[in-house]
Image (tube, rainbow over all chains, first blue to last red):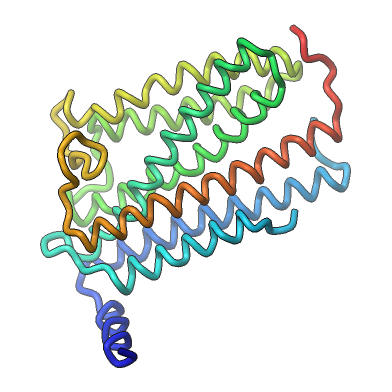
Length: 54
Length: 222
């Protein structure tokens, strides 16, 4: 079970030629979601500190 | 803002989806690893459509009931929808380059999706420019409803126009055209990104409430 799982992960990490776009797409999407979440937290903190707009 | 059980659940669900996509979903025989972009691209498009449909619904209800809560829901959903549409518009070209040989074509679906993004960015810019809350809410409601009219055209564009974009895999009258293992991953991705949308919408709504509490309204009646 453990061996089969390890082999599966190893196979997944050895990817053929166009895997760069796949990795880049996941990195970009994750960056957008995480970036927006951090932006929301920063805006929330600004409002709580009484510095928010409007 | 402290993490809520909902936001933690959404983050965990997205991580599980990534693990499932990377380690437990087979490579497609023709497209190779680039096909795996589908598992973040299609759910982001679904969530964006859902978000803008909610903007239109909340906008229509606002015009009827004049409840400022509805305007906050519409505002929050529009912003989160723009985030998901940005993911659609960035991951799509990253799939297009290895498969089509070009990042972008002025294909009906791609162009209409870009227009949808422009409309809701304009919606957010307009909200930032209008001071009077009642006027802002009314104008936003109208623009939000008009913008959402693009959604059925975008969904049907692959049938209505000659287009390069692949046909729907799930949202079509016939059975899903995908092997079971890949279909399960896609359904998990749809569920987890929908959960992420709900978590982000809730956080954005809470921010809007805190902002409005900190700055009481000048007027709610136009």
